[in-house]
Length: 319
Image 1 (cartoon, rainbow, N blue to C red):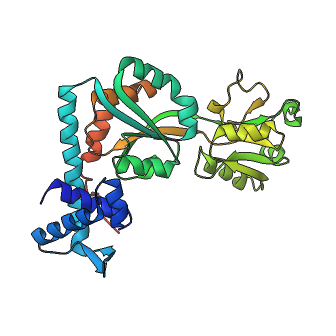
Image 2 (image 1 turned 90 degrees about the vertical axis):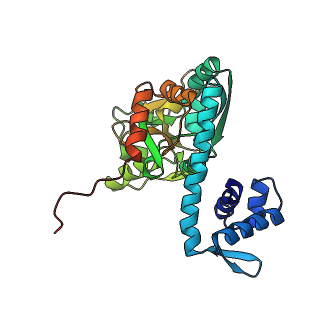
């Protein structure tokens, strides 16, 4: 048994039990992957897959138990590699950030600029996606850090820490009737077509909740996955926009106007997440600190340590 066999086994499961897709991802041939899996099964004395002819149909019961152990072994092997690199070359390596468009476009640029200046030998990568996609990338080791507003705290395999709080705002073309209102209300917003985020992005759930609790049906005319698209269509006069206030930059968005809406929608919290039990390079701690200064190395390390401790059974008597 070797790491390569475990890696092939894990990749087949990740790729929906498709050996050809796993082979492509691992830069090898399909026959080689099949051969390695057969050797693994022979050594273990069990079958890890249920097969229908040449097609893999499912993971066997014993295979699921082995997969869980294999994933821990592969994770630990990666941690060993990271430890070696940390002590061999502390200021060089790779760091991949998985994040949403809003964070990549509006929150991260000054952080990235500072980080590159501090660590010119570290190759930095940015992967954009929806919150589910970026969480999965970190869980699968495809990215080192996830940054998003939604969902990260819902994944048991991640340690998610709060970074900053933000609010939504309403944007309109110049001379729009809403700009003359003394107090913005949900009822007044609902009088116009609304352009806002797709449900998975940037606190859309908080927007929907506010209208639902007020028993008001908003006229959602168009949804998009990033703020720039929302602003473009508002500028074309297709409706008013509801977006993250951080995404409105007065000196750039001179053809639009912004109305604060923090009193209408609940605040949102952007979080940064890493995989549980991950060995973090020194520059990874520094990147987190640049993005959220209150998340010091000691704070992050403590959160990582606490996440690794087993849960204590409740001392309360059950009814």
